[in-house]
View 1 (spheres, one colour):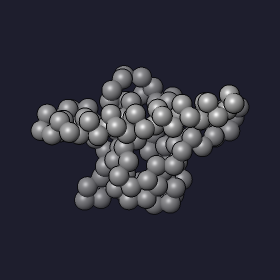
View 2 (cartoon, rainbow, N blue to C red):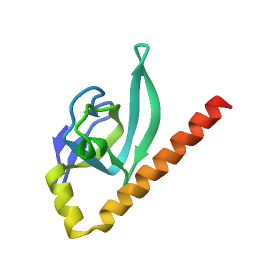
View 3 (tube, rainbow, N blue to C red):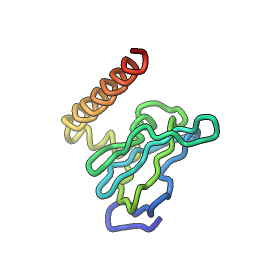
View 4 (tube, rainbow, N blue to C red):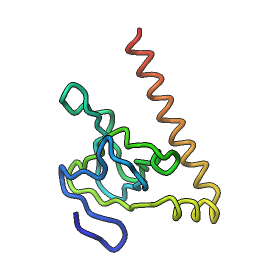
Length: 121
């Protein structure tokens, strides 16, 4: 991982976060893609791939719990790290940020609900 002007550059296969670790920040993908993986029966299972403009790891800011997944760079990835203090400051400056995050989370919940229904069907 090398530091850029804003954010950090992660190389292909490098983890931004690891499942089971305590988190204290989220990431905004500025360039590239990241795989979101969970470990099941000793193997990584791909949940989804995040790309430019997406926020990942936001649960670490909203809840003080361990990371629920590993996020791994797929190719070179440039991501901005946002801690809770900076996040709250930005929301205070621009409340629409909170709404956009709720939209994103709602979209993810809808996708997960559809997947559960498909698997049960």
